[in-house]
Image 1 (cartoon, rainbow, N blue to C red):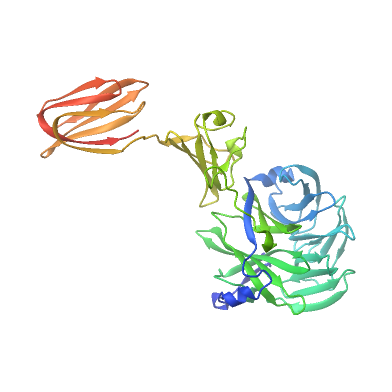
Image 2 (cartoon, rainbow, N blue to C red):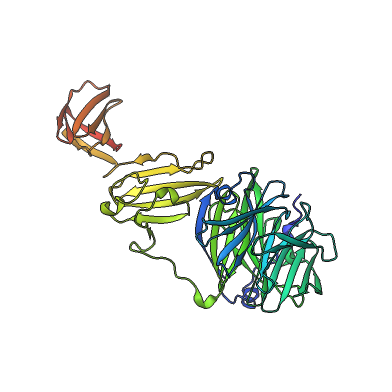
Length: 465
């Protein structure tokens, strides 16, 4: 059982009001969240072990400009601590140890230690584990006077204080871990907006002397988890109350938020179960980021020599022309194109590509092989798709290169039907059915078929490609 989860009736929800938001720390604007990285099943690669695939707590080590994070096994009794470069892919170091659930990390530059809230599993359950920030060796554990599972912990460098949260209490300690204050943990009562019945404590961090917690709400739909909101709560460490909330509704199927690592005024929110993902949260509202606009106004220009297999982050990307596309890998076309990366239910990712010639392709990121399936051409139709000609004794239909039409001539309750197509410049005309007695002859030209009728007939035609 995950004791971080709190279940309550939705009648406990506090209605969102403008005045509540305006009196809060973040002002009129919530911190802006921008997704920056997403890769399916990257946890095994990062941990180096296919049994440690669940991301949990983490933090930032400014002296080395690296992230440190925990990947745990399914029993939450073994952890691989990974030091990761800022590219989110290069592993610097791995160390395996038992720090339980490893739910929340915080780093104190004064002691050069990492403090871990271990949760309620493993041999060091219900404690704060102390790691050497250089070697990640477990140096000691602290019970802090009780045996409750400790889920959140943060160090506030400005006030030289630690904050620890369990299911019942919020506690404040000084820099020597002497208890200063204890408050009832009533964070769940202060959420803003529509709340699903289940809330889970994920992490906490400090920003400019303020203590902020991360929870998320979830519901089960057909046995699958759906995240309905990610919440930042500013906790008043003088009275234990929550002053304001920032709520983010994930795009598509987002994994759980696991921790936020602060670097200056930007919080890096990491998530990782199906996808390893990173988002930036811009805390300083005087530095609200500007959306990356490029030549087409919204799409991002693919870098030269880019591999389309690497594009799993939802968004829109493009190659401007044929010469540029030549440097790209795994593109199904040689022309310029726009690529849409779309999250689909069940944590599936689909790439949809439209070429400058109008061809439409799609492919799916396989949930079993963790590789993209082959590109599938789903539409190569150029020009009007449907023709309805009036009565005439002659009808000419032009065909795209490698295109095709279905052509019908109705007459009373009978019909003649033909399939005409082009294959690399060779035109074919096939009779599907002839129900009327009128004579219809077909003459194949270069890229066209002409129908001559002994009666004046109307024509219906559908372009297939």
